[in-house]
Length: 229
Image (cartoon, rainbow, N blue to C red):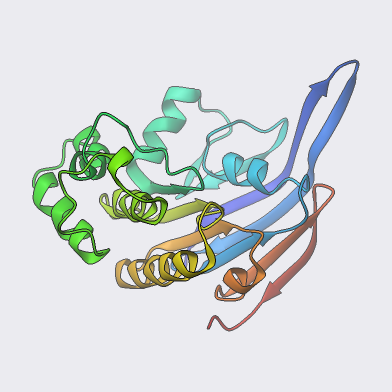
């Protein structure tokens, strides 16, 4: 099995007033192709910062991130964006849908950025897969939180990404809706054979993955391989 994500001695420091604040401190790990991994830990432990660095949304203070065979370290923001567009899907806690586009149009955006043909049909198929086949022409404001997250998941998978990063994907949802979204996420991921890396406070969600990384004060406190449920 090949390595899709390799993190080596990753450190991220921010300037806070007159002092430096180290959010991540010498973090190293690898994620294998097709695997599932949860990043957990208390608030302020560096989870979301780590996810952003892994996805090339930000650059580390030191250390390296190799994503799908590409070292992100020497790349500028535009070059990192090109790598993300080719290999990465995202699901965020806050959905991040474009309010002026319909559900169908929101899902189509990544495929259109890549110039893929058949984007409309694939978007419609994915929306039907997540139970929104009758909501194609609805705008985000006309959808519930759970429905918006379903649109976001369909959008994440439209380019058949090699790796999917999910940041608190059920954090804004009630318990029942969250369980439905979790089931859809793992079902879509299994069908696509995508590598899944997610940040969550929900330990039950984390236990559904094949590996749990626990952060504390910016360092890896626990790296547990497990049999996913």
